[in-house]
Amino acid sequence: MERFWEQKSLAEMSEAEWESLCDGCARCCLHKLEDADSGEVYYTGVRCRYLEESSCRCSDYPRRSELMSNCIDLKQHDVAALHWLPDTCAYRLLSEGKPLYDWHPLISGSRETVHEAGISIRGRVVSDEFVHPDGYDEHIINWVE
Ligand code: SF4
Ligand code: SF4
Image (cartoon, rainbow, N blue to C red; front, side, top):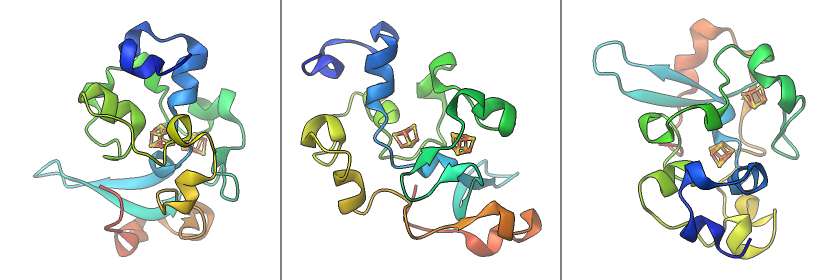
C-alpha cells in the first residue's frame, strides 16, 4: 500500500485504501449552514451527536446514513462535486490533485498527528444534543473552510 494515493485515482482504490485515507479529523461531522442566495457554506462548532469526540470516530459507522439523513457515504459520490468538504479533507485534496499534509496519518504513521496539528475537532465543539437547530448560526466557526 506504499503511497497508493499517489499512484491511483480515488475510483481505483480498494475499500481498505479508501478508508485509510480518512484522516480522522471529524470536521465533516460538524453541522453546516448554507446561504440560500450565495450557496456559500459555513461550518459550525456543533457536532453530530453520534460522534465520539475523544476518538473522533462515529459511534455507529455502518448505520451512519440511517442515523443522520445528511450523512453520506463519500465513496458513492463524486467527491470533486462535494464543495462543502473541508479544504483539509484527504478526499477533497486528492480530487483536486493536491498532496496530503504532513500530519496525515498515512504520512506521519500516527493517528495522533491530526489532533496534535490542531486539525481535528476534538475538544472544541459542542454536541447537537445541546443546541437547537435555530441557534446553529450563533456557533459559526472560522477554523474550518
Ligand atoms: S473531513 Fe474528510 S478526512 Fe476528515 S473525517 Fe471527514 S472524510 Fe475523513
Ligand atoms: S452519523 Fe457518524 S459519520 Fe455521520 S455525521 Fe454523525 S458521527 Fe459523523
